[in-house]
Image (tube, rainbow, N blue to C red):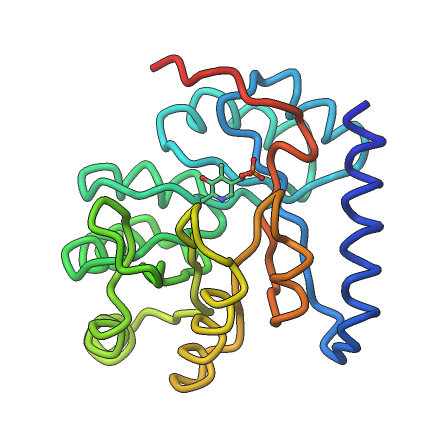
Length: 223
Ligand SMILES: *Cc1c(COP(=O)(O)O)cnc(C)c1O
């Protein structure tokens, strides 16, 4: 079943890429396995999928180290907000960290990357809807955070990530994110989830993060 769902989502991605006439041909499906047990992730691995997203460091630390040993070529993305004191574990486990959103976190990640001699790919999360409860740097503070990351800390930032407000048209937020990335010379965009990944691809997404459309409804998180 997960096999079929993966194929279906991938087919929709391919179709959206074709319709968008994008020349970069660069849109990767990040299968979001958060809240699902290890066996679901393993089903997707057995189907040949290798790129996954998790939103909690602790949950991922229980699920993924063994799977990473067992299946070659896994690329694990951290897509949930990261507490500063978990930077160490995050650097140890994740290949891509998509949620840098504040100076202190950037500093801790830089320190841990050096200490562990690891280089996860890094994204800055932007709070495009300027929602109070949501993680992500405000669009107006992006330039400063980016400067800190690149010029002061020597971090390479691949691109930007966003989660649009649930009650707004996602496309507006995707265009804003694309505009911000272009303005700052960043090439990669992580945007789009089950309900709007096709719209995201139309607007230039390089990573779409899809959970429900692949794994079905999520069981509630058990901490
Ligand atoms: C859960 C989650 C997703 C996947 O959401 P679906 O609607 O299940 O596809 C994508 N991105 C982030 C940041 C998430 O937390």
